[in-house]
Image (cartoon, rainbow, N blue to C red):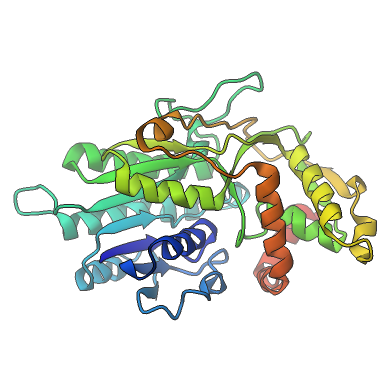
Length: 359
């Protein structure tokens, strides 16, 4: 039985990955989930799996070297899937140091602890050990509106403290692969959406606000383009890279779903109106009049678009969920989990939302 150490597994992508892995492998694997449970880490995301005998949750910070060393010393870890990161650009603009601490130093701790646990006296590594570092397309910078894509060979050009910190963590992993021949891979993904996403991000923010009749904040002219990837498709890609990918390689994971931000908002309004019964009073306020353009984000990248040619050619992965299907499934999940949304939108999140958008 392989043992997976998942960092940040109570977050959005991490929790979806854990659900996917148990759905695929059942009792054939063991998962240890390490999460500090900061504002975006929510143990409710994993209620369905928390009683499994082959699932363990450990509350720990990846920057706590002693805690991470203890996990490696007490368990024979076969796979590390490293999601844990501060990931919101707006927060990085306000608090860059936190992003450097978690994303760069925290990754260094994870690399050092895995290296110490897996390295043999001759400098080689135990057989069938793999470390996967999950990163972002934002490390590549911004594309023009007139075309072009990010490839694994695209030079890094981060523009925000968040993307700079992720670029730094990527470079650390690359350095460990080059210097020590450390058994690792990097994946750089496009924007994810789906169940369990914290509502500071565009899609759950718009869904939540629209259902409450609140304004729908859109940065600048709303024409910034992102490539959207349904989170379960991403989980499948991560699993395939760990099992089939060539060691020491980077794989870009993209959704082939490019949309302007304003398009996303209008699709959500249209889909909500279509899904709500005519007797639901909320339909009355679900119009484009809710859209409110707000001051653009500092250093706002214009367009991201990933070419997932390499992962398709080498591993056979490609996105399966087109946006209109994925957004409908996402909204259905939020309809079925309104208590989850109420719980996460109280307290500190509400204060942050007011500070960022209601000045």
